[in-house]
Image 1 (cartoon, rainbow, N blue to C red):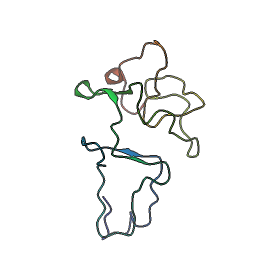
Image 2: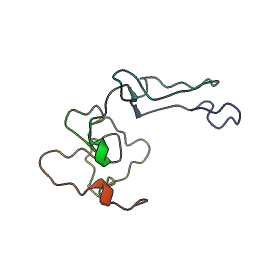
Image 3: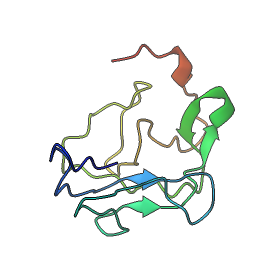
Length: 116
């Protein structure tokens, strides 16, 4: 949420974000009192379920068909490895975990140290 009292979030450009509040078609964004806006422009995906593998187990890896697959960008220096230590492909996915094509096993995201 933009905070118009300190000017820290005024004029931001939102790019390459996925925002979903649990209801199809509704993003979980709110900006008030600021000229900044978040729209589907700039590769933002708003109101689409990201299709995480298992939210209840905090498994934020992507399932097949996720709108986040292939929507990342190299423009801002994405790390070579994802949070699970997998090499990212040349086509980036949005999020901390690269989509695993095929049957390659993933290390559980819950087993990863914070700040890795």
